[in-house]
Image 1 (tube, rainbow, N blue to C red):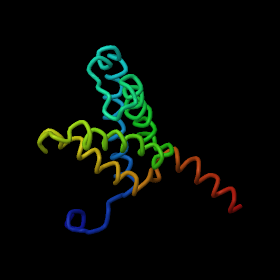
Image 2 (image 1 turned 180 degrees about the vertical axis):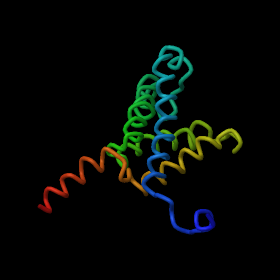
Image 3 (image 1 turned 90 degrees about the vertical axis):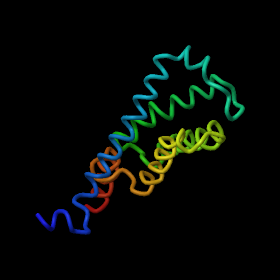
Length: 142
């Protein structure tokens, strides 16, 4: 029991990455679903933070949160699909809420940091990426 709590090694890195991806992706999928289900209301509340139009901004946010969140959760092209979420978090932090106190932007800040963690770790062993790309490597070896 002592080794479980005082060991410096990871219990299971791939399992930790899976849980991180599922929680992170699931939260973004939920928020994206809420936005798409109340599209008209969100459109009236949404601004144009980067000058591309309100509707296009909302569509891109929904794409990043709902679809990219789903791909991150299942581990499909994880490093690529985390980039739109990272961009949304950059806009939220450094454009939309730039003048707000840190207390107001703590959650987007944590999401922004988690984007980097997921990008660094990738999708891990329990992912669609592993199933797709590891199979190709095994076929090449044979």
